[in-house]
Length: 102
Image (spheres, one colour):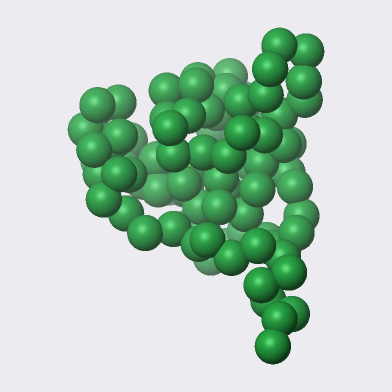
């Protein structure tokens, strides 16, 4: 399956995305993204897995992580293997204000 690479996304540092938007851009079902959000929650923001009743909002970094998850799934890795690789991967840590600071 061909997936979009993270550089194909129209990402803005301060833009929050809904899981359905990311699913569409990755070419997967929304339920798949929701599963990934739960299975890989240790590597995602608090807004990716809010308390019951809260809306999921994905940060720039969350989208980067999900792109990597999609790549690793395509390589046949399972959830535990992916979590191990994510733990050893450096993702963006900039906040929107970091870009304009000095």
